[in-house]
Each structure stands twice: as structure tokens, then as C-alpha cells.
Amino acid sequence: MTKIKSFVFSPFSENTYVLYDDTLDAVIIDPGCLSQAEKLELKDFIVENKLQVKALLLTHAHLDHVFGAAFVKRTFNVNIYLHDLDLPILADVENRCKTWGIPGYEPVEADKSLNGGEIFRFGKTELEVIHVPGHAPGHVAFICRSGSFIIGGDCLFHRSVGRTDFPFCSQEQLIHSIRTKFFTLPDEYTVYAGHMQPTTIGDEKKHNPFLK
Image (cartoon, rainbow, N blue to C red; front, side, top):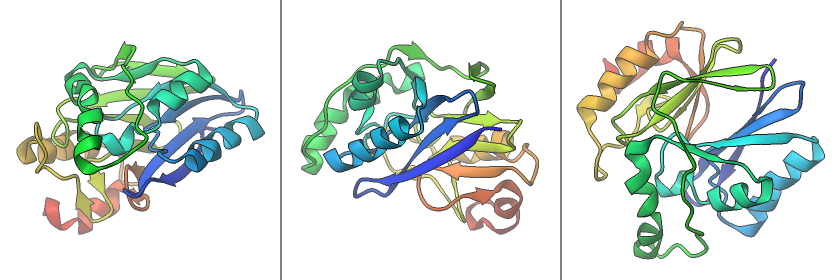
């Protein structure tokens, strides 16, 4: 069974996820750890549970989701996976941090591409990669069918959806991605989003005011 450990990091209250199973192989998704204390919190969990981190997966490259990417890459000697369409966004994070007055970001580059349609495997776990543009052009999500959940990034939230007022965003694309990719999953699937608490596909179909 795939286990999920979540952390809430940075002033943006971003959700960082560690996925692992009984093989102790693991992946880290969207490391938003900004302060040294947050980075050590993530590292300590990995070390204390004797996990072997196999990769760093990014749903997208907005700054709050990549604050700790260089730290994770260096600490665990892993590759960073990101959709090619989000490479320009990752390259601009340092400038964005300066604009926002956010200190401490360490620039980093992606190593491998995620374009949607792949099956990413670690331990006994399989993650289906789907391309869900809208909040970001290269946004992807990760479906674990054996665990009936999706790591959805900043697409679908509890009674809300991702912002589309940033550069390269598209509200039309976002709604299309949710309806054709998220809402085709069974109602019981849990959505672990980039912010706020988990929700379910069925609940959002019924109650999300942005998708009526």
C-alpha cells in the first residue's frame, strides 16, 4: 500500500508530499520547504523512516512548489522531473523571488521530462502521469490507481480551483483539464492538492462552485 506524508511549508501554505510503500522506496512531490527548519523537517522524516528517495517530481514550477528543489536534489542525489512547458517558469523563479522579496531560494534545473502518458514506478507503486494545463502550461498530476488517489497540484482544490491570473495561465484550459482528466476518475478518489485539505472527486463534482 502506498503511504502519503504531507507537510505544509512556507508562507504560501504549500503542501509537499512524500509517497512511499513497504519497500521503503519513496518520491518527493513539490518540495515547498523554504526555511532551514522546514528543509530539516523533510529530511528528518526521510531519515527516521529509512526511506530511499528515488526522484523529485514536480506538478509545476511555480515558486512555492520548488523552493526546496535544489536542497532535495543535492541531499538525496535524485533527478528532478518536470514537464518541458514549465521549464521557462522554473528558470524565472529566482527573479520572481527577488520581486516578491523572498530570500533563500537556490536556483535549480530539471533533469528529466514528464509529458503526460507515462507510468512512473518506484518500489511497488505506479503513478500515472497526466498533463493538466491551465494553472501552468506544463502542469501535470499523478494518479495512483491502486491507492485511489491523485496528487493534483494546483488544479482542483476543496471547493475551489487553481488561479489563472498568472502569466501563461488559462482558465478555459484549467476547467477543461478538471472536467476531462479529474472528473473522469471515480467519485471515491481522494484529491491531494497543492494547498488546503484533501477532498474527493465526488464531493467536488457536487459542491465546487467553480464547476457548476
